[in-house]
Length: 248
Image (cartoon, rainbow, N blue to C red; front, side, top):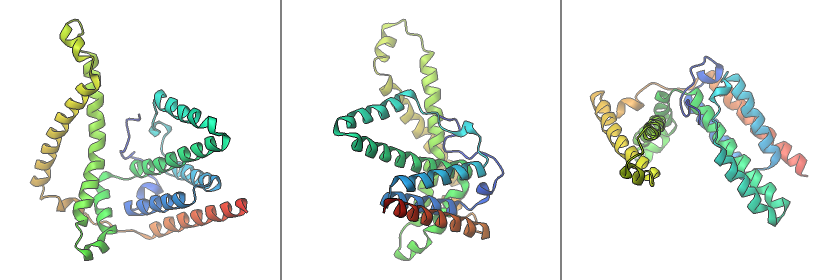
C-alpha cells in the first residue's frame, strides 16, 4: 500500500484549504446517493467528479494505494463464482465492487487533503446539535480523530515488524517452529506495540490539558465551503437526473 495512506499530502490547493467538515458532508452526500441509487450513470458521474477533485487537489499519482496482487485475485475469484449464475450476476457484482471502491476513494481524498488535527474540531462542530440530547459528542470526535491518527502509525509498525522478522536467522529448530505461525507472531507484537503507543499517547494528551484540547481548536466554514457544497449538490442532482433519463 502507499506510504501516505490516511495522511495529508502537503500540497497547496483549493481542496486542501476547504474546511474538514465540508469534505465530510460532501463524502456523506455521495455515500447516501450511491446507497439509494447505485446505478451505472450515477457511478460514472461520481467517479468523474472524484477524478476532477483529485486533479484540483494536485495530488501526485504516487499517493494512489498500490493494492497487492492477491486482492485483485480475490476480486477475479468473486467474478468467477458469480459467472455460473449469468452475466447479470457478474455485472451486479462488478457494480457493487465499483460502488465500494468509489467510497474508499472519497475517504482517501479526505485523508490526503485534510490535516488530522482538524478532524476532531470539525466533527465536534458538526455534532453540536446532538449535545442537546446529552450525547458525548466531544468524546466521539476525539475517538475518531485518534483512531485516524493512530492507524498510519500502526501500519508503519507492522511494516517494521515484518521486515525485522524476515531478517531473523532460521537455522535453529526454534526459529523454524516460530515460522509456522508468522501471523500470530506479528499480531502479538502489534498488540504489545499498540498498548505501549496508547500509553504514551495518553500521557502526552494528559500533559497537554486533556482530550478537550483536541476539539478546542477554532474550526468553521468559509464562503468557499458553501460554494464547494453547492457544486457537490449540483453534481448529485445531475447524476440523479442523468440516471432517470437513461433509465426511462
